[in-house]
Length: 293
Image (tube, rainbow, N blue to C red; front, top):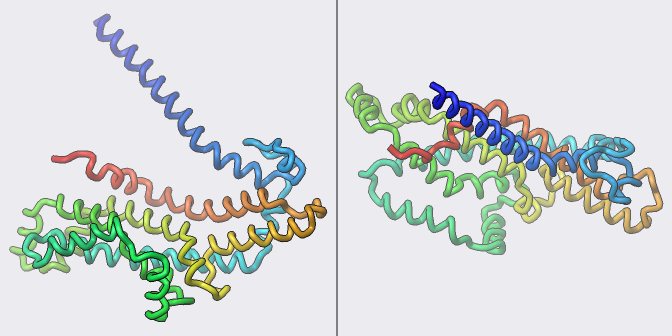
């Protein structure tokens, strides 16, 4: 009994050490976000003097007033939310419709299709061919140029295919005996069993599109179609140009660092709010492939 108690005590001590290490690592991961938050809430003087670390110094909300007072910024936020929702719905639909048939061994050309999909993970046409393709398809300056080109991620497709393949074949066979077809099996059998991976991939698609920047910079010239990231880029660049022209003579205007920090917080918080709704599925989805049985 004494030995068992000793082992238990050692185990508890080890648990505390592990918990302390995880807590320290979590705080370390939060450090950049805390620094950005402190910069966004600090006034010009402490920022220029390098006195701001993780706690705001001489709190000033000028940067946030600049961001939220910009009607174009709010419009871009609304547009981006709508565009991300559309992109995620289209991407998940296309990924599901591509992954499910690839799980069928009797699909003709299955190996060739998988080879082509994997090939796109290593090679791409390049920026100029992509631009010419978008122009020839008349997709420039439309919302579809931000949705269709990246609608299917080859890596996510392979993850979903692997998960679909792990579903017992006996379940599908029993459904076929009852007269179910492919679409019925997919809708009422496969998808309900795949909620963890679907939520995980949906979150990945949404975050990737929310943070997307380069395609909008290349393909979009209409101000009404600027996503949030491109609008933030434009604001920061304009602020830097103004500051250089004025020589930082206007002490009331936010310096680029505070404006950048406020813009980062403005662009980050909305997508962070999505995670709690998908957390229980996300944790399960991250374990996909961890155990092979």
